[in-house]
Amino acid sequence: MGNRSQNRKRAHLADFGYTGSSFIYFLTLCTAHKKPYFLDQRIKKIITDELEFRRIKGEIKLFCYCIMPDHLHLLLSVGERYQRNLQNWISAFKRYISRETNALFSVGPLWQKNFYDHIVRRDESVLKIAEYIVNNPVRRGLVSEWREYPYSRFVDAIPA
Image (cartoon, rainbow, N blue to C red; front, side, top):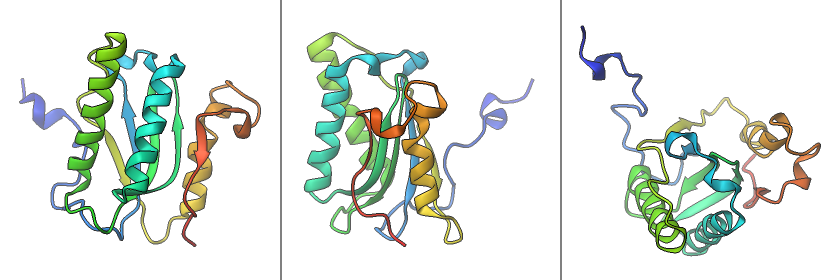
């Protein structure tokens, strides 16, 4: 039997620093055991409030997001003034949301240990990725049009 870590798909690029504001990331953060914690409107509000707080603070530029029952999609770049890398940002964000939801609603563990990222390449359309994200509730049959879903939003202007 081989080493489990050898068989596991690497979640992040080994030789990439995940720093700097010039990169755009398509992120997926899943709940622990795919539990539908995000059906709770109060938890969704904690997430959206924290995203807005970190956006206004300049930690991130948030192009769009979508909160599904068991996962969160984000399309963002790390803010110019944010001195740490993407993993540090995600870790702090998840830690805050976990602490709040556990204190208020006794939810825990909230998140899967890791997260999935895709670094948007120069030849990819940021708008197409954003449309894919906001249309997630339509593909899952939750609504017929993405604008009907209150937790799927475009936020900052999409770069050309």
